[in-house]
Image (cartoon, rainbow, N blue to C red; front, side, top):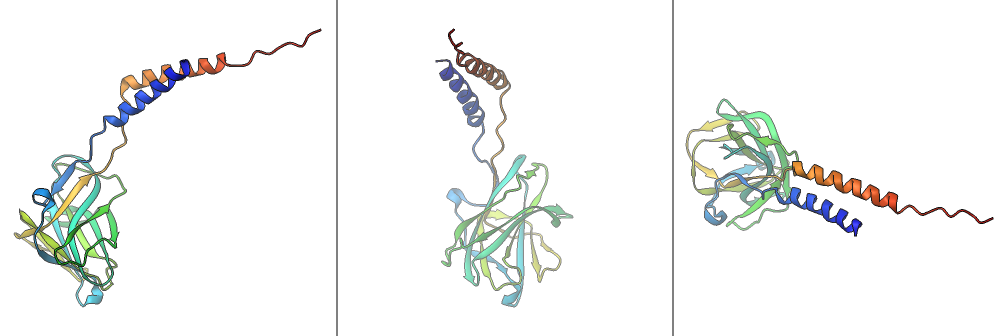
Length: 223
């Protein structure tokens, strides 16, 4: 019975800790209702296509959040099925050189010109500040390869954007439709509630008592 109480206590602490963690929240999104997006607009091309091109769009998180995933609407025109998604800090109104995190998505783009949503998963658990602006950049992978892919447009988000040719400097454009993307918060490590330490400590003491009480009685040999 005491063993059962111990297990129940530990299970309650663990369940409470993990159960209190909120689901993944959206940090920023340019998708429409139901993750809708428009037609293909922006090229992501490797230099082997004849012209290396990258596009970037700014976003400010709705609140502080851990960078978890980035969904982008794309379709593959030709070449290897791979793109690199990078989130960078802003510098003087353009994508900066400080990389928050980067990930490569392989084999997920459709070749259908209607496009589809592909997901990049970040592993660095980097915190994005709700008071800062970041840029999401998508480039062909590898940069020197022959990939040619098209980033589909947001249905209703317009503003600043930036383009880069041949790996040179970023060229800012004051206004235009954004590419369709969504940045989502990653899972955080659940915090043990304060009362949980008391319950866990009591459970460990109880378990120790069970172990000590269960020690076999040594039988002395007879005369």
